[in-house]
Length: 407
Image (cartoon, rainbow, N blue to C red; front, side, top):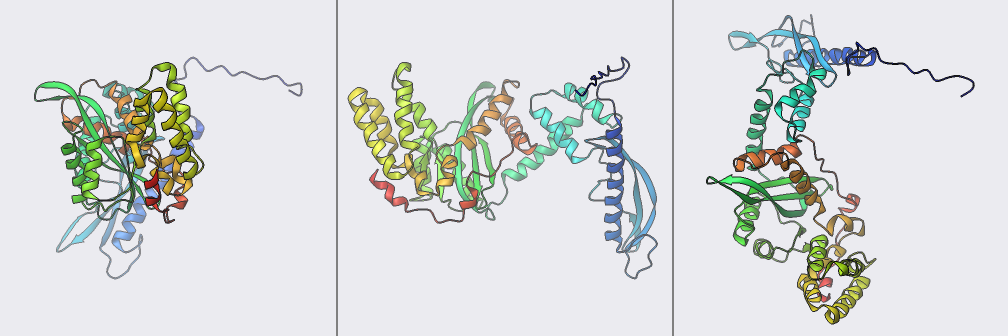
């Protein structure tokens, strides 16, 4: 343009891909400075005095610095870690930072990236090779990933038994996905039950994961009762598939609690009753119900569906009627939330990521291994649980759910 010619700069044959450029080096300098500043501020707060300050009640004295290297997202950051001798009764001991632990070799964000790749299906050898340009001379031994997984396992066990009484959960999604694992010396597919809650702020949170022997009523009862025993209060709504055992468990534990049947699961069930050539027609009639603008329109579409398919294919009509009132429960809640409440897509997305990861894993050796893997996908940030759509209306009072009884 403007009479100028584009100049194409060919890379030097001797340049290594991902080599540090000027911008990266500049950022690394700022990272070093930030780490030093954080460490010095932490130490001053602990001592109760800044450098060279003479104040009564100080808890110790600075004692020079020590060169440290910490792996970060911008490569290794070498910095001067402040040291101090602090009073502990009649003794003086070495001060230890809580923000930058004594033996830490990498920043937490690098650890999160390592775990993310591992749980994403990259084996340990490939993780080391992929991270080498980033970490450069930072230590990354063969056992680094294993140690991180052990740390995650300890955290998972604490998470699995944590107190839930402080959680303000309004909605709960319950579903299961099947994975292949070894049990008593034989491999087979067992369900991993999952619960995702929605807080009063609209934030989603993973509440529990557990491998069970089946999706029987007894298995679901054990899973759900565990949540209640750890303090989970009665939610305003449960979103589930059509598992009858789960429905019975929820009614026994929280009598009268509204339940929403996943409309996607129900559509799949309806289509299973007809040949493929009728799938689109069944889908169109069903969408007229669940995507109606209001409850009255949905009821009319529901009645029309039953009349039409009772004449053409009675089992389809019976399948819709089996869902009963639970198919339209979401319409008793603010309209802005309908998209999030009419299906179990929130938890299905988790299950989809689980299955994607499992493709590279094969058969898991035990229950612990599969749970750590699945939990790690969430803990490492590979899946982000965002707020539900319409979270701004979470504080509104839901409409009269009993009005759906006439459906």
